[in-house]
Amino acid sequence: MTELFVTQKDLQKNIKFNEKKIWWKNFKHSLRELIKCRTAFIGTIIVLTFILVAVVAPVIAPYDPLKASIIKRFIPPFWIEGGSTTYLFGTDEIGRDIFSRIIYGARVSLLVGLITVSISGVLGTVLGAMAGYYGGRFDSILSRIADLLLSFPDLIFAIFLMAITGPGFFNLILILCFKSWVNFFRLSRGEMISEKTKEYIEAAQALGESNSKIIFKEILPNIIHSLLVLATLRVGYFIILEASLSFLGLGIQPPTPAWGSMINSGRAFMLTSWWISTMPGIALLVLVLSINLLGEGLRDILDPRLKLE
Image (cartoon, rainbow, N blue to C red):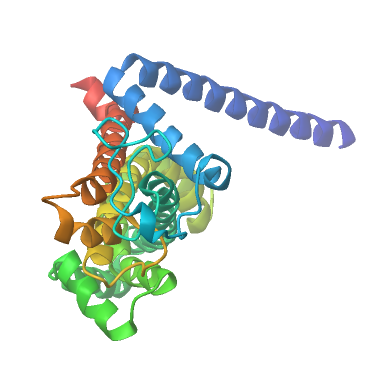
């Protein structure tokens, strides 16, 4: 009996070791494919650069992003006549360094995008997996709620709720998560319905595995690639949504540096001091474009159906 127990224990260790080995092999293969895809690799490098800049913002920002100086108003970028390398991207209407504010604004944009995707992704994936696997009334109720929420345009819906709750970082996260879980729910539910009828699920059920184990151990690992691609693309979408709300005065409030509010504050000076709005706008464009390139690259690498085509 002891020998049998030891043998089973060793077998389990070997299985876990092989699973880790396979996971590491797949990871290295995906990494090589990502490097081969030029656009996705460039997008990855730029996104990682923005993340690094946001993390070490207090170290690399040359000035306090909130410090104003009336005598240093409207200094142009360094490549324009009258500009100075002291203020690389110039200063705004109250003399704050735009380069420092863009660096700190990256923190706000990335935090909003990553936190919103993390919360809504986990919530929507779990609800969608359960609804797709069990079906019945639970599935019908959640599906009708999802359809109802999808009938409202995201920006209009967010403006309406932000006008009720008031602006602020945590209110913004709450409002975005209130509706954004629906996209993960629909994808997870559809993939679950497709996967649960396949032979390996029937084999797991025949072996007596619990429903929760089948959902989270058998099915989710096979659909995680689709959810990962969606999550990556939604990060860029939420960054744009946050910038839009901040531009309208309903998102992150001044004087906190946020790209949307920075673009809005420079509208009145576009003809004379265009850099106040243009520089944060370019930063927003580059970050979101890079995230989308990364998402498309991950889709091409991780989706096995595209490889078969």
